[in-house]
Image 1: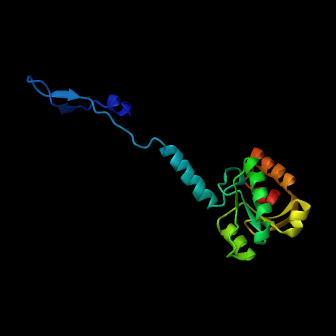
Image 2: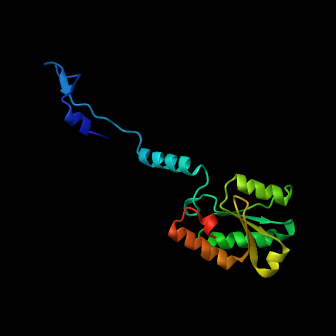
Image 3: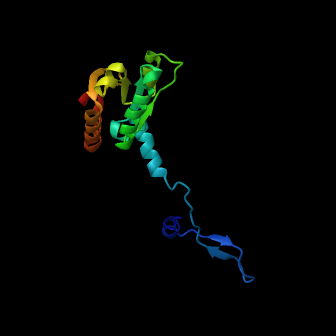
Length: 164
C-alpha cells in the first residue's frame, strides 16, 4: 500500500459525508506487484542467458544417462550422490530411447553437464562427462566431479563448462 503519492499531491476525492456535506478524502494506492522487481530481474536473466543458465543458478545442473537399462542402478547411485551434495541432478532411464537421443534431449533441455555411465564407468567408479554443447570432457571420478561442482558454485562462474 502506498500513501506517498497521496501525500505529495493535494488531490482529494469526495466521499459520502455526513448530512452537512461531502467529505474530502485522500486516495490510497494499493500495489499488487509485491514481487515485481524480482520478476523483472528473472526476466532480464532469462533473456541474457537465453536458457543457458550458469551452473550455480541452473535448475538443470546435471543429467545422468545410463548406457543400458542394466546400469540404471549405478546411474541412480551417481544421481543420489550429486543430489546429496546439493546439486540438481536428474536421470534418464527411458528404455525406449537410444543413447544418442537421450544425450540430445539433455542438450536441448540445457543441462549444464551430461554424465554418461556405462560398464567401464561402473567398474572404475567414474562418469563420462560432456557439456550441453557436446564437448566431451572424458572420464572422471564422481568425487572429483562433486569437488568441481562445489568450486563452480562457490566461485559463481558463468562459464563452468569451459573451466572444467
